[in-house]
Length: 422
Ligand code: GDP
Ligand code: IMO
Ligand code: MG
Picture (cartoon, rainbow, N blue to C red):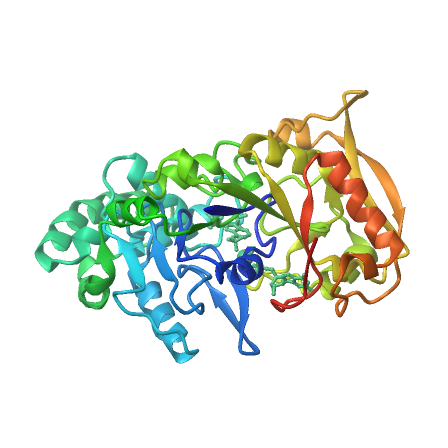
């Protein structure tokens, strides 16, 4: 059965670890959205590898990795990442790596504009400064340049030249400098020549795999609360990490998604600006950040940390139809005496269990907490659910009861083996 794996919070839930654990059983792993703003950490032969554009199944032999049409691609970064993965022992050829011809490109102008806007008088989002927003804007604005265009130098030049003029005006009006097309055209087309053998009409190849009954794993990037439509707007990314993005980013019909596994940390993190009702400050927050190594896999920024928000989690589950939860980083809570979760909000003097993603709501709410005694035991080496401390099991069972979805996998460490399947 096909499987979709999706982050249910603000990204960095441990999707890489979960997918690396699950991917062994799949013929195809496909990324459907986002770009190299994503950073998915996996461990291969004891070494840490962070993947940004390549799907997290690249180290499983026999698995075909697909970068779908919903992904925005910086070709220079992709070439670097392919070379890096080969150096780590991945064998990537045209038979097991496919790049959609229809994937929009990230150009140097997009990255510059992202930075100009972040530094300007406009609202600061705390983006990864990778040009993600401007690249998706071009797609919606019907002026995007695609992987297909990169394969021929004349076509590429013809398409980027007017865009470049448009962007240079915009950047200069906002305190930035101009970018010359000539400064990157050779490097980009060289990357295009390298990527040519991987470039395919993945809409057809994916549908062929589906028809042939080959098993497909959909690898989500980012998380539900960063979704452009359902997230904490405007502090979101510019794509749909949620269920709809999975179809528009691959060309596979909704029926192709067999099961959906949502990933949630045992607590919450967020990188960048935006509301975060259960955020922890002070020494408790610092302890959680250090114990959980909560520093961005892409930008190295310290992640903001807080307790698990079950109102937000229930909302994420509701809009996607999540079947099971892969619950990560339980071990990070090992030393706490008291663990809290949000079970409702207080807004305008009233209690509510509905999540409204607007900042007007989230900036005003007060969390209603439920408290649990900690387990004060190291759980990383435990293999069986029944061997977990009673307080840890109590925490897990309270959550699954509250959200009405089973916590099927409990992750207790960075390694593939540190996963308890129930
Ligand atoms: P992703 O973007 O969802 O793939 O997550 P990231 O890779 O950005 O961040 C998750 C971090 O947590 C990585 O450093 C993982 O190695 C780490 N991690 C994943 N699962 C666990 C776990 O169960 N316990 C601990 N201690 N770390 C974990
Ligand atoms: P993975 O796949 C965590 C956040 C950024 C910023 C906002 C907009 O590793 O979970 P963008 O550069 O996308 O325009 O930034 O979204 N963001 C992520 N946070 N994990 C991610 O990906 C993220 N991708 C984007 O920090 O707040
Ligand atoms: Mg990440």
